[in-house]
Length: 326
Image 1: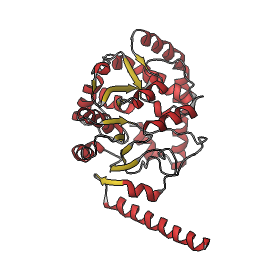
Image 2: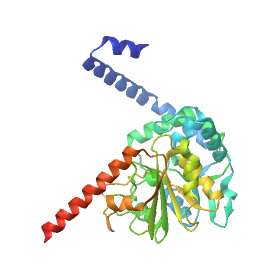
Image 3: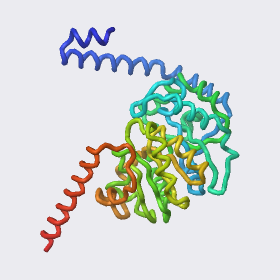
Image 4: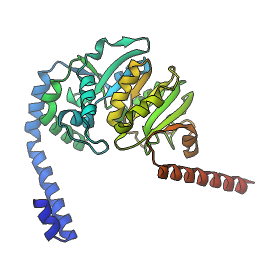
């Protein structure tokens, strides 16, 4: 009601000013409530005997062959609140599958292709041992205050991996963690299943030590609607490949299903790679990226046209550079 009134009665400049004022008021309220929310969540954490491995321990577990399904705040919201997130509409089947994975006791799951573990954000189980930005801490303390008890009721395992291991590069040991992440696919045949705009590793050297790279490109939004086709494309890959999935909540389910079928699959998520990390290997170009694509699932023709245009532009620039060098 208030939003409709503001939209109808106020000019654009007035509306922007009101929205800015509302954001400041909410920020002030968050700051005032922060000490109380922090104390309450610390108390609730102590009542639940669940531990989360550190980012480095998580990476080591993956290097040893563990497959991973991650639960971030987006997956937890789909499960707990039955509402969609920015890039995935709520779906009852999706929510039920997420609940099935989170409520398993995965600490005893092992097979010929390694074990399987669930990752949850470390900040759900502890506030200790990490450096936080103010914004990060405010967000998660507030999130824990409203959701932590309901999350704890779903946890059946005693030990979880850190779902934020690839976003921990703003910490003191970010270079060490970055190098450990690179070792995950060192010398391996790598299959990346990702959204069409992700382009993991492009213009970086993070994948330079992989033996080979293949990509399956999927929709950025509502990828779960194409789940059967994505799974069908994934199982055509060799089982000695490492499958890296960057596909939101769909990745959480896909990693577990691939594990059950005998694959090593890691729900990697979006990495927050620091800009001060030096690129030491071969840089993966846009042309390399397109040559690595082995399948496109649910990607529009417009995206294909854009991709072809970029390849053409790259080839043109290369020919111009060769002519100039001569």
